[in-house]
Length: 173
Image (cartoon, rainbow, N blue to C red; front, side, top):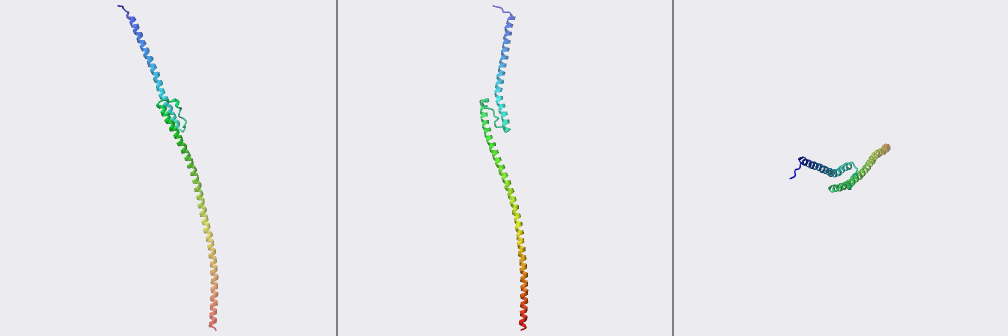
């Protein structure tokens, strides 16, 4: 039997422990790097989508990043967001067009209302002027009627005098 000194055994044993510790640390470091890359591959596209959603909410409908930055479910999410943003852009454009039309119609209605008010004022003025003209004509007619009535009254008085004179003459005959 061969006797191996204890110091040599401890030396080999310590070297193996150091090797195992070194390999363990190396494996942990590699795992940490892999986990960091996996986490980054998940969080980076999510961060890009969150940032794009904020920009889209602010009115920038071209803020969605290109599809090349996404894969798997994130690519499907990107496609869905892209379709939603496209539809939203169309709805906003339609809404803006309808708002413009409504503003134009409001302006036309205001102009028509002002014109109607002006026409109403002119009609009232014409009505007053027409009434005034009719009153003046009526005064003329009343004046002419008074004059005619006065002439008629004089004629009747003369006729009555003439009749009285005739009656006296007949009685005196």
